[in-house]
Image (cartoon, rainbow, N blue to C red; front, top):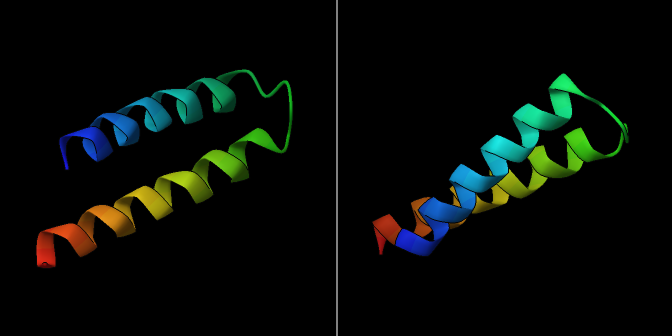
Length: 48
């Protein structure tokens, strides 16, 4: 769970950076998708 929380924090930073400086327009949706998947996985682990 700790690893997932670290991954979520890293993805949030990357997403914020991509929104400030959108070099590649595909980055923002990709980071949002990865972030949602990590949140879902973390929720599933908390329920188990």
